[in-house]
Image 1 (cartoon, rainbow, N blue to C red):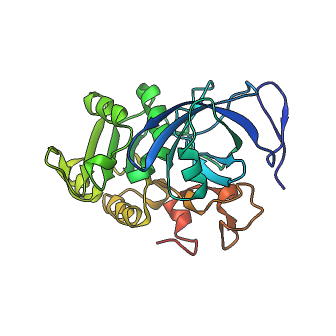
Image 2 (image 1 turned 30 degrees about the horizontal axis):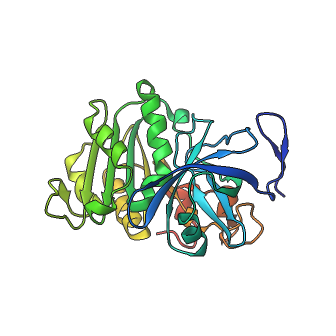
Length: 283
């Protein structure tokens, strides 16, 4: 059973009934991805932890889970990075400022790096995986003095598919973090690293004694990034990952995300690699 929750105004919110949200702005990232900035119309905001997700409704089309990709400290608006891959997301891509849609959630356990103050962080993101892990990065940077070494590795298929380019520029210029990016297939103007994301591991130093790794990306990338992280000596229980691709209803009712006795939308989407290994689809 999913309990009702209250917003900041004490209003009881049903987990089954969408709240109305208004699109504030839309930014085209790539031909397939757009960034939507939204605000809840009831004025209550959206209280969300890094790596949680919401169920987005385009009325008359359907509903789909989408990760919140904005800073958890911002209560005035939230952001969704949406790839057009199906009926719901293609309909969403046709919407613009002042259009309205439904939002349920947030759902999932999320991951708060503030619970691990003093530790080094290795954040590894592949492709669209940067979207759900971006709030983790922003949380680390907003509270930079509370953590040890912060290393961010990001990979995409080609330069045109790199997301959040303003963030990438800012992170590359910071002196208090180590940020490396790679592409599988460069274009004529690309001057950075070429190769899969695991090639970046050779360029960084990781202290396994004090490092917590957060890895999010497509299955193939995830598999080899985990193996590379393990080879660096980081233990399985300190490798954090997300199985959010399995979501559908968000409240553990449809069974679509069930793996053995685990409902990913309720127990996850955030798991340690140690936990993932025990699931049917673990590596």
